[in-house]
Every structure is written in structure tokens, then in C-alpha cells.
Length: 70
Image 1 (tube, rainbow, N blue to C red):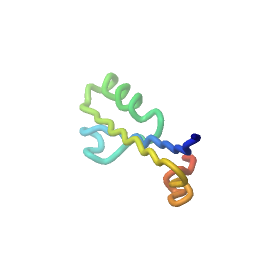
Image 2 (cartoon, rainbow, N blue to C red; image 1 turned 180 degrees about the vertical axis):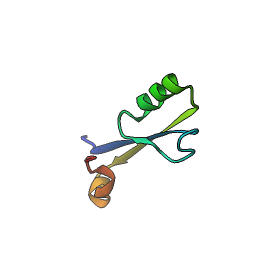
Image 3 (cartoon, rainbow, N blue to C red; image 1 turned 45 degrees about the vertical axis):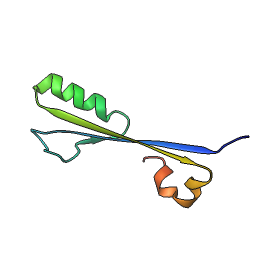
Image 4 (tube, helix red, strand yellow; image 1 turned 90 degrees about the horizontal axis):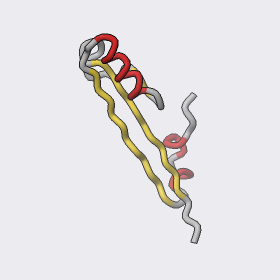
């Protein structure tokens, strides 16, 4: 049986010193940018990652979840 599966990873990261709880970086490299910023400045940084999984035709019901980032 073939099951349709769609996944998306949403990553946001920031610097508590520069931006507080507001994201400064988003996308695939956000965690790496937060780590590099910490290494360069010594600031406390954060990164949040959310994995979204949908089975079946869920992407058709919520196309905005699975659009490619511009």
C-alpha cells in the first residue's frame, strides 16, 4: 500500500540580546546562523524547530503549509 506523506520543517531562531524572543533568522540555515552568532558575539541565542507531517491528501486541504519558501 502506498501512503501519501507530506512533511515540512519550520525553523526559527534568534538572539535574546539583539531581538529578544522575536525570530531573527528563519529557514533551513536558522540554527546554524544562531550558533555562529553565539560563537561570534557570545550572545545567548535560541532555535525552535517544528516538524509538520500530513498523511493522505492533507496537503491539498492546506496548500499554504507546503508551499516552497521564496
